[in-house]
Image (cartoon, rainbow, N blue to C red; front, side, top):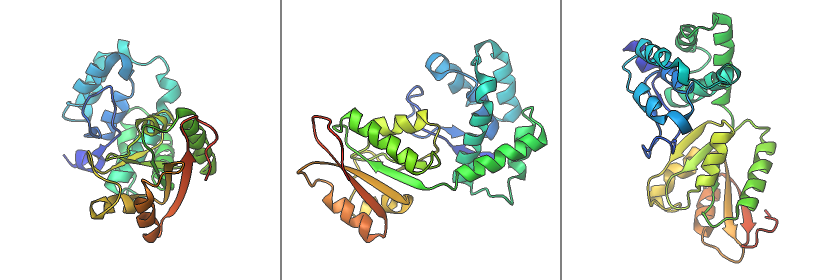
Length: 249
């Protein structure tokens, strides 16, 4: 039970597992073992694995299904562990002083203690990167959205986490981009929640930088932008139009 309390955390929302909310991982081992399977092919296997009551059970279940493991697992293993530690640190407030339980858990998954410590330190560092929130409606042309996402990624040198708004104005394309880029994702807001007003206070507190996509000649996000700036946040407005031409600050 102690190990579970130390490493239990919430991961990303995954469309292949129709939970509608961030997945709960009882241990870091559940994250590692689940990542050995391709969700596009074996989501049912991952769902069953996540129900295993402890580390040993998760590893045992995974070994029974070795034939279904991703063929590139050895290539992505370090990346998976780093990201898992980042999620764990984001939700459980781990730091350099109390990484020891996570290091021990990773070592129990077959890595040397030195390598486990190195990956834990890298994962912990990933949890401390700038938090960026991108507010965009589904009407934003993908060409403009992808261009801006690349620029944001370049600005932060690939070291940032996404604060994903789940209320009105959420953008699944931004969420998918972050998943593909293996960025840590924090979730804020609920279904149909507005991005302005008292109920949106958690949104204004969650991130360090905000990018708001606003259609040219419209001011639908004007109030939300003003509230973010009043809260002392860095806000950049990205203008767009239907023909997908270059977006502007």
